[in-house]
Each structure stands twice: as structure tokens, then as C-alpha cells.
Length: 302
Ligand SMILES: O=C(O)CCC(=O)C(=O)O
Ligand SMILES: [Fe+2]
Image (cartoon, rainbow, N blue to C red; front, side, top):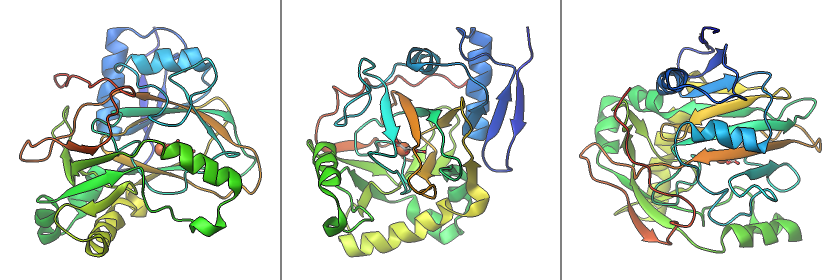
């Protein structure tokens, strides 16, 4: 049996995993080791994987039940748990945590490279726990008291008049059900107790504040998430798999590959309902996403 080797990539986030054949069923010891590595490093990179959609789903299932592909966006044909991430359709060049507009966003996401552009197209993954620790004391104490409303009807960075007909259609599908959920701005990770900023682009308003003021505050907090020191830059190669903890990271797909094709497949693991530092849970304001994801039970820390 090969020993698992975990090689740190940066001080604050990311590790490469060697010695695990992710195309085979994993034993409990290996899964525990991977879970522990994920808790510590937040994002794990596996090189030279031999996976198809079925294999990616089987790998993700080791960490919990799967969500369907997305609450509103269609899955890959014949693979209801796989979301296509194709540059032809969409470019996720905005900072976000996956699907935070629903009550229980995925606990973890996997991305697998299918078509990699000849240059660019990196995925940036930020450690929001490190961001929280970087906050100056008064700002951290303030953040601890806040909740934010997350919605899929968020403020796209692109002006609506610049959208193509196809973009408009995609946006219509994305918004075919509107979701709004109030989450704590500081989320406590259920396995590690680590606190992290839980915001990103779907967070549109601070509960109790107007939109304009909310935006200013979110901008200040987000500044700590996107500090270069808190970011892993994944330069994709063919046949790679990245697993990240969606409870304590944000990510961003860099749109720097011109018109080259780029395709990843995403499979996400169902999450728990977030809780803030006083233990109070998130609550849904609009939209029922129970068709999208079961609610994960919190597992005892490894
Ligand atoms: O394209 C990527 O690298 C990330 C895609 C993404 O963020 C998403 O599908 O949610
Ligand atoms: Fe994403």
C-alpha cells in the first residue's frame, strides 16, 4: 500500500495529494486522512487522475451525499449530479462560495479538468478562515455580529446591456427560481470550529442595513479574503481533480484564456445548515432548494 503524501502548496491554503488512486474505492483510513487534510489545507489537488463522470461522483460520495448539479442550471446529459462548467456558456470570474443562496450550500466541491486552455484559465481558491484571522480586532468583532442575505439574483459584474441573447437566456434559467438566504457573516466550521468569513458575490445585503451601506461593509471584508497570501492559484493540467471545502473558501475562475475552449465538470457534496458563533443557524427567506440538496448531518471531528 502506498503511503499518502500531503505536500503543502502555500502557507495558508492548498496541498497536493500523492499516493491515492482516486479512481478506486477508498478505504475509511484514506477517507479520514483526506478529510483531515481538507480540514487543514482547505483545497486538495490530485494530479493524473483517471476519472470519468461516474468516477468523479464516486470520489465525491466518500465525503457525503451528493447534491444534484445545481438548483436551477441543467446537469450534464445522463449525469444528474454533474454540472458542466464550460467557457462557451459561462465564466465564473467573480469571487463566490458555491450556491450560498440556498439554506444548506454544498460542504465541498470537486472540479475535474476535461479541456484545459493552452494558457490561463486558472482557478483561484481563497482561505476565508485566514481572512477572518487577518481582520483587525475591531473589524473582527463587528463582523461577528452580522448576517448577510445571499441571493442568486445578485449584482453581476457585467452590465445587463452588454449581455448577448444567449447570456440573457442563461441568466433567465439561473434565476428561474429566486433564492434568498440569511447566513451568518462569520461561519463556524462544524468539524474544526474554525471561524471563516462567509460572504462572496451572492451576499448582497447585510441584515438591518441598506444595500449601499451593505456593499461598503462587504467590500471591506472581502478585501481580506482576496489578499494574495490567502489564495491558491490552480493552474489546470489535463486530468486533474481539485477538492475544496466550500464552507471556508471562496473561488474565482480567471478569464484570461481568450476564446480557447475550457471545460471542467463540477460535483458537489451536500452541506449542513451554517451556524454563526452564537450557534444561530441560517434561515431561508425565499425559495425551497430541497430538490437540490439533502441536509448533511454534522459528523464528529476526525
Ligand atoms: O471554472 C472554474 O474554475 C470554477 C467554476 C465555478 O466556480 C463554478 O462552477 O461554480
Ligand atoms: Fe464556483
